[in-house]
Image (cartoon, rainbow, N blue to C red; front, side, top):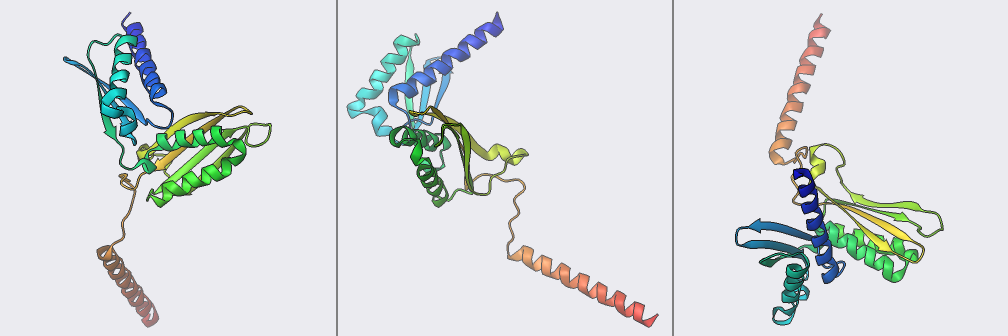
Length: 224
């Protein structure tokens, strides 16, 4: 019974997140986080456009709060806005925008849209990015296209620093899957080596020592 309750609870949370994203609009929300406290439920919406969610005089956010209270039977839901200052590094926003572009302009423009999104990410200073589009692009057969630039770790502990998301575009030929991976410029890479002046001096001194030792060995062999 406890397992069933947990599954039911998680399903309700998922449906709440999806309903909030649907009400606000695709490409405007990155994440929806739900926290529970004794005084009520705290719903944190991460977005790069807080003005669209709040509305004039907070009308939009009040409507959203009433919808959550009635539909999901929450006693005291409280919505908070978390503004995303660098939307170029938010993989979910980029993926949703790319999906909307495919729906608006059609799958024939997928290369232009993908390269523009990739350039936007890399110009902002990302260490690496990868875009994968899977679907009927542009032929009648389903095919996967990959667009990548920079450094992107795929295995090991460092791979956890990569932001990976997916989105769906509903085009006339069919559904197109969008997968995006971004490695942020401030990501902690455990296997990253920074070569500074101090390290260069150490390498040069070690190299000179090795050369001196080799010359001594050669002189000794000549004497013999």
